[in-house]
Length: 113
Length: 111
Image (cartoon, rainbow over all chains, first blue to last red; front, side, top):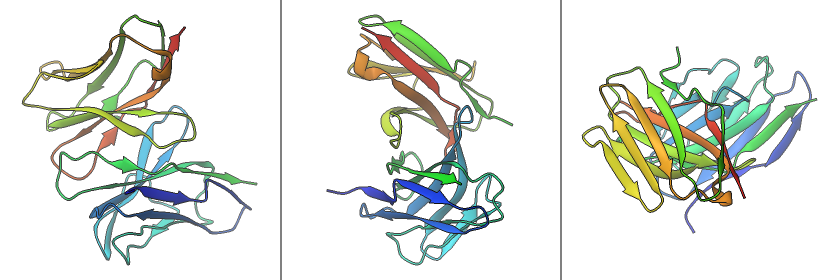
């Protein structure tokens, strides 16, 4: 079954620590995305990648970093510089070109303790 | 600047009746629009889309209407069912990979 897998589903982090969220897809999609969901704010784009070894900042990239070394994988690191990291993080992928919707993963809930 | 707006954070509808969810946008360059449905603690799932060259697209109980002059789209669900209770996001793109999402409307269908 093709799909997009995010892990872990729940993650707890101490203040000052970096943490990496995993996102893997077997849909052969070229483009991958990271969104953050906060109550009342919808989905906000953190980073996106249209092709391997290339990625662009989204609207709220500060305090985050990504890599795209393989087509299937687009991990997101939440660094200690991110001031308010507690949120629900969604990874998505899409084929090349516009007019294709995203396929989303099931999300990771990150809580800073 | 919120380019895609869903001004109703929540909506309650009786089972069997019509649900109408609204979405407004400001960017006239948007040419493709989608609706997603999201259950708690899950990723959004694609529901229905519409191109700017159309004003209506139908898929079973779901119909999306696009009014380009008003920069407004709406999702109609008829008849509404309890399983439709979820958060609905509209999203728009101007021919790029990036979609801009609205803030979502929580629909509650009452049995």
